[in-house]
Length: 574
Image 1 (cartoon, rainbow, N blue to C red):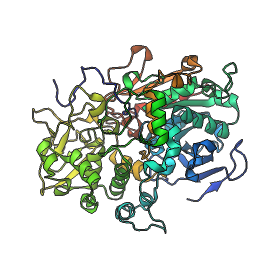
Image 2: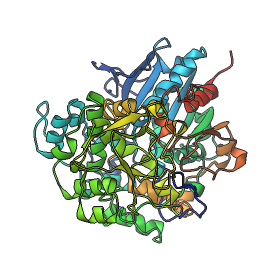
Image 3: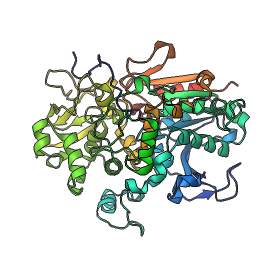
Image 4: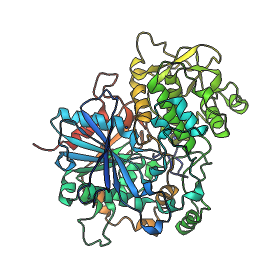
């Protein structure tokens, strides 16, 4: 069997759902949103090469009920990134279509930047003025972007780790479980309610929503869209104007499916994420969340926690500022247990290197681009739901990564993905650079091969521009990643057969009430596992995050297929 692309032949394990997974301010009242001060819209300045798109950050005040308990005032607001054609109408209601996208697990609105820009641009080329709204979950209100927003990597590290001020502000630390009581009820019901409240505030006309809005999402966002479609929002199932499916003209799913069951989206993640035992009943789990006995946010000591999610943005800053410059981030970061464990997990060549910590990432000379690639490229990072295809290491000898936890093999593709892992092989040696996606397969490409002689990658398997990935991570005002993902959203979906969750599916017919576009990553979480009757569009060579981050023109010279499909789906008759 080809070791470079390990295709699963085994059954997916269903223990835990987890892989489903920027000047001036304009403030105005949103139509139907109440008095002035309940809506803000802030223009976003971007260095994206995809021009002709206007971006802004929108915040709408939609308070939680008082029963939610004490919470930061920022958490009574909902936020999204609004993308529209610069030549199009200023009012959303006048757009030809509005695509509203739910993020996946551990994902924020910033992750949609490339696909949003590409889709709006593609539609404009067809004479359509559409909008793309990338949603942030309510819990993203806890994130502090001050250090990243400084635009300087050292300043960001000093802010988050050394107590230094930025613009008069000091980082308050990462929010602990005891402060998150209000998140104990942020499950599927509140999540779909937030989408409904945002839509009705921004687009008060139900008839307009039904005609123009396309509802969808990436990864876990497909399941959330399914629950939204089946939801009832006025408490009376005999009235359907408020039903979720009557807020949408169609649905779209990006490396996921629109459904209310996990099905083949179930995967496995490391068992140390502090998630409650799924053998517990709904009432016991809810009591544990309410009391704080169970953690209210998804967290693990390696990669999956607020601190390491922040590191991705810091790494993005370095690559955005000087992609080919030699990185000093590994040595500038503090050597705490969390960072050390994460670095070992990512850079250990084998078990001996992981246990000893030698050679460490600090022992290699890496450019800023190579650091970012090591954190998110599918030939490096082991977690499938964090993988993109942004190119490959260059500049020195490359070795197979044989550390078992990084190359899990065929039995657990939902965790590890399909691409075989590689690592620089010469500590204290040459400067390892990063070969961008569009240079893989060039005449000067050394064509690195694994131990059995198989090429690690090829031009058809690389689709995302590392510079634009860095920009999405570091330039957006709303995070690419999600630091505080509500545990209850996971447990609700795992307990979907419980009466408390089943009652949320009031209109199951809503799932098939509108047209559906399913776009899958060819090497993503659902590769080879989707029923043929879905008739999906398959983006060859794409990994799970590539459906959001891929460059507008691919190595085969053709337009990017995800945004092309979305623009076609959004096309309205003339």
